[in-house]
Length: 227
Image (cartoon, rainbow, N blue to C red; front, side, top):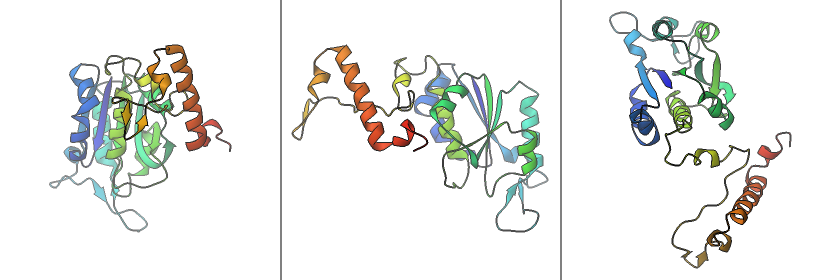
């Protein structure tokens, strides 16, 4: 899988994408992650990429020409199933969307910055808009890093245990059950006996019951979105 990320501040992406699971995915040859500096496509001597909004108002807007030039250079090289813009007014990201994106071959992530991007880019190129929630960040780089991490960890062969990603929270619309490790007793708190029993069927049943109970208590909206 290939993920191209277009950013006005690519330095923000270097650390999260060059360590841990994304690094492992790249080293195994299971994912290609390329960060493109929008300034490389900037206009004029100073490589301008932003300007004041028409109609007035505070803030700056990413200009259409640099974004279009970068996008066109990528589109000429390969077919992309989705061109995604990270925006606070996009669809709220979910595990289901991560699952879907992980099945694709090539995607582009456009990181919003300043007040956003020229709307004509959204109209002509963008096929999906994604938000992390009802809040505003300084730029879309954090969102792009989160999306990338959530996708590549699902690729077969990336995680050491193939079942690990399948047991994550939200994969079955439930939160994960409580987890325990050594020692068996910590500050007078003991690991539930069922987890020490060796009875895998009973352990699976206990974990499922715990997942339901935790979801009811912590995220009832997952079980009943209309509530």
